[in-house]
Length: 374
Image 1 (cartoon, helix red, strand yellow):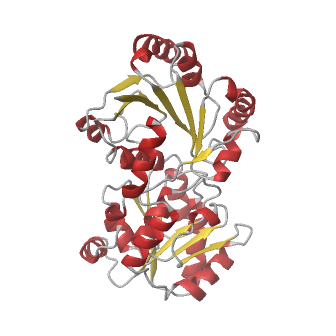
Image 2 (tube, one colour):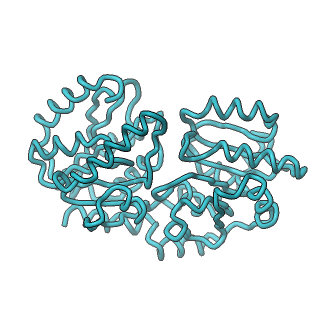
Image 3 (spheres, one colour):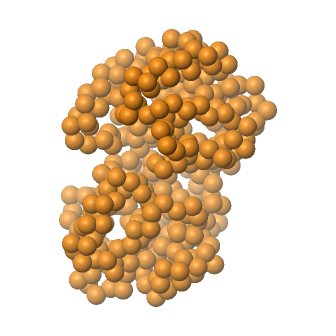
């Protein structure tokens, strides 16, 4: 059996696309051939989807968070690697940047033969002074990456360019998804619409962590412009994160409490995508968004920024893109002009589109299994 030590997954409070991607794949891998265990850095919460991974036989090793206890964090990781590294054929490091490469150094130190670095973003998420420090570390470590890694994976070409030097040949690993989990469901749509008093409302949805990258504050400015057009609409934002309080204050300040709804993190995303009449995604940057893939699997019309790797992310025909250089009024005008009468993509066309583009996890899982074992 090929044993993989998976690193870089967040706790359940901060879970996102990386965590769901790994779960989607592992559910479909042959457990007689390949086995995943995990390291998670978390002071309070279990790793994302911990219960599901445990049911599949995985073990999860926990350490303290680096930011909270840096010396203790390094000590715990070092002791852990010294004890368990001999049991693994491979380490799979999933990350959005190279600011912290301690996993790679310890994997090298304790002789794990195969070290995979998997890039999941195209720019640094952290901002401010901390972001400047992280960016400098990322640039330094990017030059050294060949000293540690043996394999270089990325979710998109932009994510590869951000993470790896130009002379490195990387493999694109598709963020393939389970089409059934987010396919359109009319009963679930009606349930959400009734519960949140959205029955006769044009529902504009957004899914993502509440942070700088996802740019939800721009959604609120769009809402202000749409309100001027006397449209019966509601923008529903699904997710949680560090910008929640700022967004709440912005909504209150702009008198948009009846137009913008923050619902936090949700479990049944099929229901929420089905409730949306338009998916709006003004992200500042992306590796390759799992939310955009899930929305397309649902068939809902989509309007996104042009900073989301448009050529790679476009699977259905009912997705459009616009520059963030355009102001919120221009975005609102485009929504009214093109998307208020948009139609969902046909289910059979969606299945064909995803399989042709390589984003159906039922098909792609075998390919990933072979990449590990071969």
